Image 1 (tube, rainbow, N blue to C red):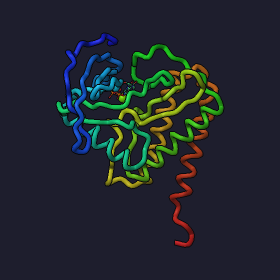
Image 2: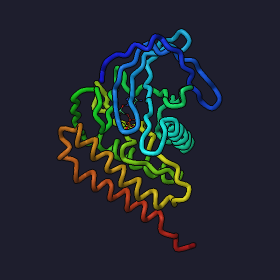
Image 3: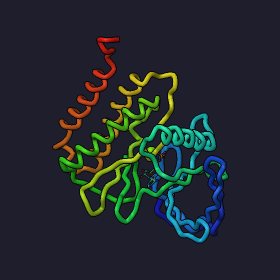
Length: 241
Ligand SMILES: Nc1ncnc2c1ncn2[C@@H]1O[C@H](COP(=O)(O)OP(=O)(O)O)[C@@H](O)[C@H]1O
Ligand SMILES: [Mg+2]
């Protein structure tokens, strides 16, 4: 990991809904490695503009090929985007069919964290009442919005976006491998699993990165309880029906 790889300035086309943009990859540095792929931060040229993107290269796993996995992630992205979920602005399939070019969530202001091992270093954040409230409200609302659109969201989809110079915390659905449209499941069924997975995702992220997580476990469970109770109330048939 973390070894810059010389790619000889190779040019690859990345596609989105029929549009193909040539991207010259100048340099790649591996930033993640997981079950389904390896992730790289890439210095690229789009036309004559230098940009940084993240490229995820999928791997064959179990019975599915790398191309099937990449296609699946693209399909999931499109459904999530249509549902108005918080996904990256850029998400394009490479011409090799097995890689995806996406927005780089790391910047001068923001560090992107997931529960997988990554190369951003040993980061500890301090939750504040304000950041805890806004993050958990946002994540549970996202879980509900997804369920309303028949989308199943696993816990590993949530990436934390941590302000480098502030205590602000945000999130993005950054790993779309397990963000799946499930037309045959009801929104009510999906809501209960999405809320559990949202709690699990937050729990794992807090456990790994929040130095003061212990102060917030009760509140996380309380928030989850409230989100579940609200959804049960909303799903009850109205007395007028
Ligand atoms: N767009 C991105 N911007 C910044 N970091 C990212 C981005 N996508 C992935 N990462 C980092 O790379 C790691 C692996 O990505 P992920 O999509 O979760 O892979 P996997 O499918 O192996 O679980 C994550 O831990 C995350 O920190
Ligand atoms: Mg992941």
